[in-house]
Length: 486
Ligand code: NAD
View 1 (cartoon, protein in one colour):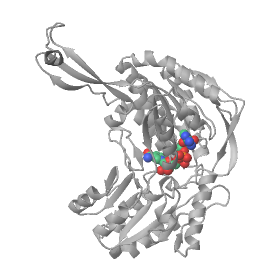
View 2 (view 1 turned 180 degrees about the horizontal axis):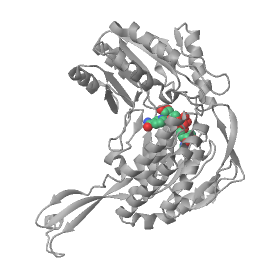
View 3 (view 1 turned 120 degrees about the vertical axis):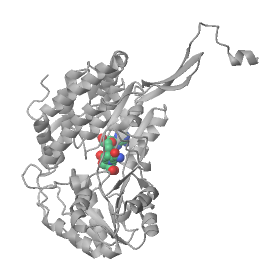
View 4 (view 1 turned 90 degrees about the horizontal axis):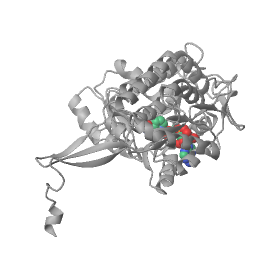
């Protein structure tokens, strides 16, 4: 199946490569220039994709679990075999340096494989002489999967692997800013599944709402901003589609005074600036104990001055550009707001003038109600916040509508655990950050999410429970308490 003509890509619908008359230009954020075109699906294309997934569902649902797992393992192998090619494309459309792009692609391959190590449980709620009650977890039907631009391959894998393993079929939509790796991924792994099981469509801003309103979907799994998540939830309410929402965060990391700054400064720095700070679980508010504040601030500033930021395709750059122009303008506006309010900005190494680059920037102890602290920046501007005692810092860390993840840096593990227990987040890391595994649910608290991804709980979000009452005696031999009562 040849879907790429020069730099034009095709969608995957019903096992076929499908192009559209309308196109979606794709820019390289390191240059701001368009280098490729993706299809721009309309309502008819969406209908075709949903119809294909609907037709494919019964047979895929009835395919033995072992065979569905085998298909995912095969997909994992294919992704690994094409990791270099996918990583190069990833860097061109997303901006992230090549080595890190490849890590994400390999991470997606690992997720496809390791999801198959999970099992769909059958819960037994009663097992007596007369009957056994089993709760099975059965697939929902056609899943609508919508992903953002910051981790376009991994976050697609987090949805495709568990949804398909559980026996659902899917229509996947990547972000209009990063459509290409998802299209190429779909093309590469299409042959692992019967036609229609996995469909990948791309389009502009109007496609997401068309999808969430479509009656053919039983479930929406969405990763993106909290603002869009609210719209998705509203749309889902109309016909009570099941939803999983992985949304924004304004994650706090708390650094206690007993840490070894030499040992952790670089880790703290990367925890905030990985992927140019466009990570839902990145440290976005760094609380530092007053006793070590000046030392750590200076170390972090030194790192910002030393760290090369530039085109991800050029060797040596640690971080790339902001992924897209609207986000670039948003982050610049946040920095401007900080400057206009007299906050102290500590700038990192100069960045290329062309493309959507912003120097890694620290903000020296701004007030908690400044925009740069209160909003999810999702870009390389990190507020450093001084604190004096534990109760105070926990209150300030929890004073957010978000509750995605948080981190505690402290050598006294008992104290670290005590702080961790008091953070209102779905994940807490102690002396580490940015970790996730296929076996551990990621579940945002408060307005960071609804439901969970990964692990058995994440897998079960693609199923519904079905209770089966199984007699151990012939029909009529088991007494019916309801009949006896009447
Ligand atoms: P976004 O909400 O703008 O877009 C996400 C996806 O939703 C895109 O594919 C977009 O086309 C689509 N979309 C836009 N409007 C829609 C609508 N009305 N209905 C349906 N779909 C619609 O988010 P973004 O800017 O692409 O991504 C950044 C955000 O994602 C950040 O807030 C970040 O924290 C969050 N995020 C969360 C997680 C997590 O696991 N919790 C992971 C990564 C990113």
